[in-house]
Length: 209
Image (cartoon, rainbow, N blue to C red; front, side, top):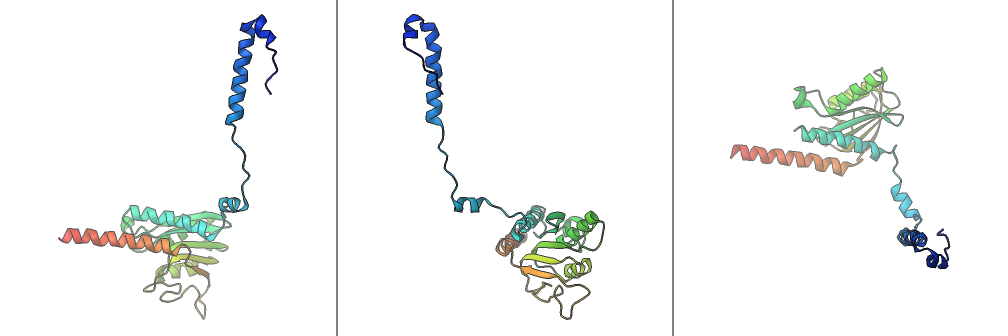
């Protein structure tokens, strides 16, 4: 609150009164500039809430890995392994980088997760991968025994989680059966793959011409 000062003081001593005028002017400016508080509406607060344990959140982490593959000229597939709400393994497709046909994102992420846990059994874990696993990766997943597999876009030609065959939910089951959730951020995953192969075809066309 700005102190009250009598104008009679200015008649006696302008030097004493002038600082009070400056202070009063500053307080007036602060009062006018102070923003009004508008409490958030329910819809606003709902938009601000991010579920850090949702499938979409962890699939976004896998998409980040897929973008790393894209930048490296690899088929853009990314994967993360989650244990009790924490990412314990992440990887992107590195077949060309490592000159290794088995270096799919799922395979590398599973290995990283096993190293983190110190166990080859990935119990109570969920694998998130941007594209439906192939038969090789699906076989490795069954042996590693995660509880769930969540993938983005399907692969009707060579997918082994229901697209072409289903090794993860085989009936009769193999030595382990995973719960499968398909289509999480599937459109984004498919768009990234289509963009990659479209650019690859354009480069090849330019080289051949």
